[in-house]
Image (cartoon, rainbow, N blue to C red; front, side, top):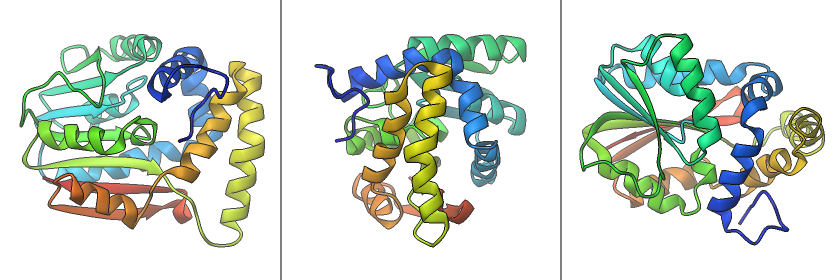
Length: 240
């Protein structure tokens, strides 16, 4: 199991909390800069994937600083958007962003564990997750919880990194994520391990059809996977 801090005695979940609390102040800058803002295009594609069901209530799982929740509020006509995350510092940054955009009446962020959500069954029309399921301590449990709180015929739009397979994208991707990104992350956030963890966690993640099979095993009736940007990321649209 990929973990951020190999010298820590905490489990993966505890280390993930520490990692995101450590880098919260620099997260948005590094996230957009190091991805060359491609992550914004990916989120827009995910939003288009759930627009067809006209969701009125949306849950953003592992919301971080709220980018996905904010974009949903701006692009969709939802009445309620709730974002949950296990990092208090990330949520604090997100709250500031929401206040600046005057979206407090639509978007609410709260501390919450994606693997044990404080919501009733069949609570939300749609779910979004931006690069968060890879950090679950128990992937199947987290997906089961998402399935549980999603309404029948609801859709979960999950964005996650994957491993490109074709030359030269695969070689560049590996070099960039393994060598360049951790150094830049350390320079700005003072946390080398957090950005090296990104590469190791992507390597271990069961992307593509393997992930599709897991979503079906936890109860989703249909999952459509779309490869993005030459296989750097994937969009999964999971229907309950």
